[in-house]
Length: 132
Image (cartoon, rainbow, N blue to C red; front, side, top):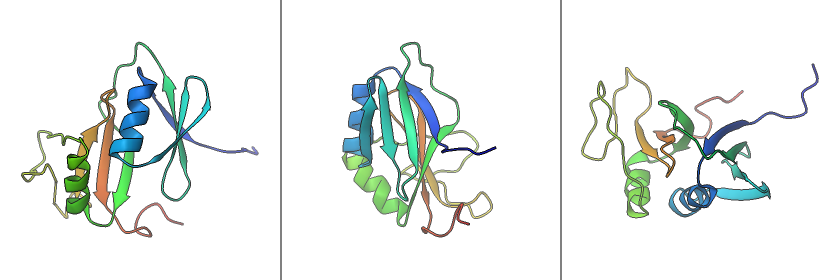
């Protein structure tokens, strides 16, 4: 099979609200390649499509993960821009909502976009995850 490209996608009922969140809160580049479609450009160049779905119901799992070098600073900065941090049973989280457990994996915190889609922030060095 000769694939020409690959990407991930998820839905949102309000693309204007999604665009504001991903641009103004998370600081990602958002493109609008066609009506009813947003394109997130992730660090490293990967792309994710967000499509309009009026009857959208958010997934109960993480749809997008972003790595940062300093999770605590990122949680504070994004919180100042309006991100709120989720708390989940089964995870010991600090006052910021950060899970720090080496047996679990990297330090992590979760927020949601306006549609309720779960976005994870993880403390990761650029070369530490899913590289080669």
